[in-house]
Amino acid sequence: MNIQNLHIDAADLRKLFGTASGDAALLYLYIRSGNDSKKALEELHFTSTRLSCAEATLRQLGLWPEEAAPVILTGERPRYSEKDVLEAVEKEEAFRLLRGEVQRLLGRVLNTEDLKILLSFIHYLGLPTEVIAVIVTFCKDRARMRGNLRAPSLRTIEKEAYHWAEQGIDTLEAAAAYIQLQNHRSSQLHLLMDILQIRGRNLTPAEEKLANTWMEMDFPRDVIALAYERTCLNTGGMNWAYMNKILTRWQEAGFKTVAQVQAGDRKTPGKPSVRQLDADEQAAIAKLLQEV
Image (cartoon, rainbow, N blue to C red):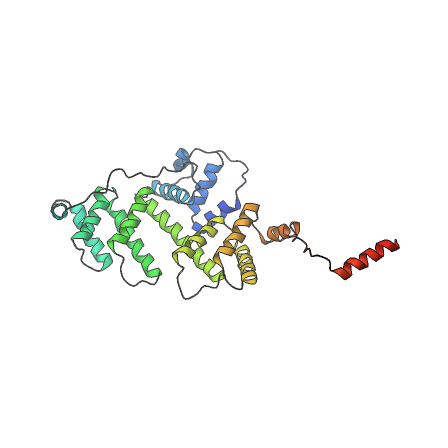
């Protein structure tokens, strides 16, 4: 096993700490040391399941050396008929079992249109039934976290299923890694909302998009708090566009700590104000020059 001194970016470390996955951290260090990932199973004494979970976690974090190419769904979305659904219910045990499980999770009977969507998850997206059940659970939990007591519709679940398929999330290990990462991001989002003193409501889609952008910038909490403080002082309250300009400027300057921001402030003093001299001031200066 190759072991060498490593320089690990602080942003990578924060990502690894956020997952709380010791296996993912160990695999990351193993690969960054120049070892062959194909030998990790033997040299790290992992089981196949542990290795798959660790690899899936690193892929979700963007820390895997070779990113998996996104799956491109070709052709038009199929249009299933009621006959297709009836045949699947009659001949495909996996589909019958999935129908029962999804109905149990959502607490209602699926209608024909719902079943057409469900059938497309298997036949068109090629997702295993156990992964589909995880998607439904994930969507249900996310809706509840956002304060929606109603179960999500199959149309809502369909959007998530397409996202998973396009990202190649088609195993239970990859699903677990993805959900773990989403839970971490949700936790970070709530911490950010606390800094911004946003309570008692959800973010709007536009606000959440900016918040996710800021989290991807990977600023520590005290830097975010400083940007918020300056935004409020300069605009009289929270202004998302103004704060975004501050954080974007700091990121472009390479600032990652409060000390770096403050040092940067000292290097770029504000321009002195310039005004025209009035007549009395001009006369006084002219008199002084005559006396020299």
